[in-house]
Length: 279
Image (cartoon, rainbow, N blue to C red; front, side, top):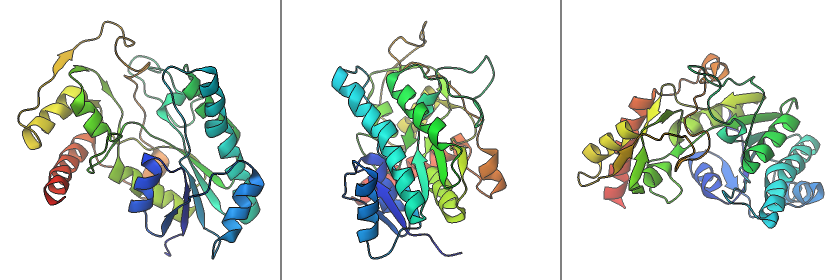
């Protein structure tokens, strides 16, 4: 099957990584404020893209009034603008959402599923959930949710580097997403124009202490940190940090088998070491 041409909006960490990893992908330099901006830019290209990926997003843990408006613009208005532009140009759209559309655990020993209604608690989560609810029934849009992207390429935005940099780390488990699997899922959704909501989480629980022990063995034998058991999930953590998601059955049915967490850990850490030694 022909690889679709992909146009990516959002010049941040995710947009740049996807443009480097997806075949036939181009990162847009254009900032869009209106549907006409988006349509005009898309039509100015040599050919219309088969797929548009929205990686635009804005998050602040402590939000000012200006941050509120910026989040509404980036997380709600921009996806609506791009969705309408895609409808007008015949492109398929993939909207990058977030695990923040859910707050904390669903119920004890239960994981969030793709058809669960969002229940955010933070402003960022509410704006992302608003976009999801508006887009989820459109026949030319897919919504992908993920968390804590773990990549083999060093970056301050790579969750691998962030976790390894913390002097104190909570002993909790949760669902996580590895970049290589996220790219595989995104490519499949783009190629087959699979609309709907997709939870792109590697099967199995991700435990901080397990990952960092493997990081110490494989990457940095001198790495040390203090582990602690939080008495309250809000103590030094993002709200709802210990949440789990059911890996997408729809992706599995489409032939996308995301790696089990521990397999993905080892393979990503080995690739990380190899990348660092060659750069």
